[in-house]
Image (cartoon, rainbow, N blue to C red; front, side):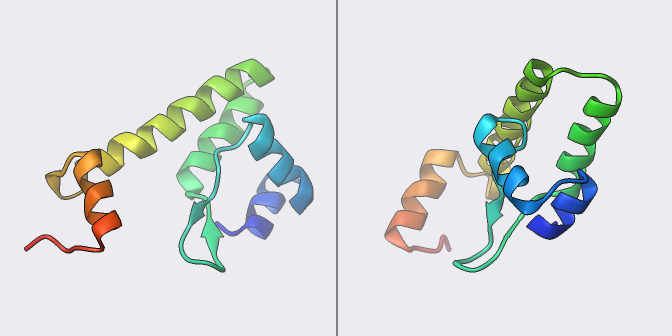
Length: 97
Protein backbone atom coordinates (compact mmCIF):
# COMPACT_ATOMS: atom_id res chain seq x y z
CA UNK A 1 0.00 0.00 0.00
CA UNK A 2 1.23 3.49 -0.80
CA UNK A 3 1.29 6.15 1.92
CA UNK A 4 -2.00 7.71 0.80
CA UNK A 5 -3.75 4.37 1.10
CA UNK A 6 -2.20 3.81 4.53
CA UNK A 7 -3.45 7.24 5.60
CA UNK A 8 -6.96 6.31 4.46
CA UNK A 9 -6.82 2.95 6.22
CA UNK A 10 -5.95 4.59 9.53
CA UNK A 11 -8.09 7.70 8.93
CA UNK A 12 -5.07 9.98 9.29
CA UNK A 13 -3.11 12.36 7.15
CA UNK A 14 0.16 11.45 5.50
CA UNK A 15 2.32 13.30 8.03
CA UNK A 16 0.83 11.44 11.02
CA UNK A 17 1.61 8.16 9.24
CA UNK A 18 5.29 9.06 9.06
CA UNK A 19 5.19 10.24 12.69
CA UNK A 20 3.73 6.87 13.68
CA UNK A 21 6.64 5.16 11.95
CA UNK A 22 9.09 7.29 13.96
CA UNK A 23 7.17 6.51 17.18
CA UNK A 24 7.25 2.78 16.42
CA UNK A 25 3.50 2.50 15.92
CA UNK A 26 3.89 1.48 12.28
CA UNK A 27 6.73 -0.41 10.62
CA UNK A 28 8.88 1.47 8.13
CA UNK A 29 7.86 1.32 4.52
CA UNK A 30 9.64 -1.00 2.12
CA UNK A 31 11.59 0.93 -0.49
CA UNK A 32 10.96 -0.45 -3.97
CA UNK A 33 13.25 2.08 -5.63
CA UNK A 34 14.32 5.70 -5.21
CA UNK A 35 10.79 6.98 -5.79
CA UNK A 36 8.42 4.33 -4.48
CA UNK A 37 7.82 2.82 -1.05
CA UNK A 38 5.02 0.57 0.14
CA UNK A 39 3.68 -1.18 3.21
CA UNK A 40 2.41 -4.76 3.04
CA UNK A 41 -1.37 -4.65 3.49
CA UNK A 42 -1.41 -7.73 5.72
CA UNK A 43 0.95 -6.06 8.22
CA UNK A 44 -1.21 -2.96 8.40
CA UNK A 45 -4.41 -4.96 8.83
CA UNK A 46 -2.87 -6.78 11.81
CA UNK A 47 -1.93 -3.44 13.39
CA UNK A 48 -5.37 -2.02 12.70
CA UNK A 49 -6.97 -5.10 14.28
CA UNK A 50 -4.82 -4.62 17.37
CA UNK A 51 -6.07 -1.03 17.76
CA UNK A 52 -9.67 -2.16 17.25
CA UNK A 53 -9.18 -4.86 19.89
CA UNK A 54 -8.12 -2.20 22.38
CA UNK A 55 -4.34 -2.50 22.30
CA UNK A 56 -2.43 0.38 23.85
CA UNK A 57 0.62 2.08 22.33
CA UNK A 58 3.10 -0.18 24.11
CA UNK A 59 1.32 -3.27 22.81
CA UNK A 60 1.23 -1.90 19.27
CA UNK A 61 4.93 -1.04 19.47
CA UNK A 62 5.68 -4.62 20.53
CA UNK A 63 3.59 -5.88 17.62
CA UNK A 64 5.49 -3.63 15.20
CA UNK A 65 8.79 -4.98 16.55
CA UNK A 66 7.55 -8.51 15.84
CA UNK A 67 6.48 -7.52 12.32
CA UNK A 68 9.90 -6.05 11.59
CA UNK A 69 11.55 -9.20 12.95
CA UNK A 70 9.32 -11.33 10.70
CA UNK A 71 10.49 -9.27 7.72
CA UNK A 72 14.10 -10.04 8.66
CA UNK A 73 13.35 -13.73 9.10
CA UNK A 74 11.62 -13.86 5.72
CA UNK A 75 14.67 -12.29 4.12
CA UNK A 76 16.86 -14.95 5.70
CA UNK A 77 14.81 -17.60 3.91
CA UNK A 78 15.02 -16.01 0.45
CA UNK A 79 16.75 -18.49 -1.80
CA UNK A 80 17.83 -20.46 1.24
CA UNK A 81 20.72 -18.04 1.75
CA UNK A 82 21.61 -16.61 5.15
CA UNK A 83 21.05 -12.89 5.55
CA UNK A 84 24.79 -12.17 5.81
CA UNK A 85 25.42 -13.92 2.51
CA UNK A 86 22.58 -12.01 0.82
CA UNK A 87 24.04 -8.74 2.06
CA UNK A 88 27.48 -9.71 0.77
CA UNK A 89 26.02 -10.59 -2.63
CA UNK A 90 24.13 -7.31 -2.77
CA UNK A 91 27.23 -5.35 -1.79
CA UNK A 92 29.28 -7.10 -4.44
CA UNK A 93 26.43 -6.67 -6.95
CA UNK A 94 26.85 -10.36 -7.72
CA UNK A 95 24.23 -12.86 -8.76
CA UNK A 96 24.52 -16.47 -7.56
CA UNK A 97 24.70 -19.06 -10.32
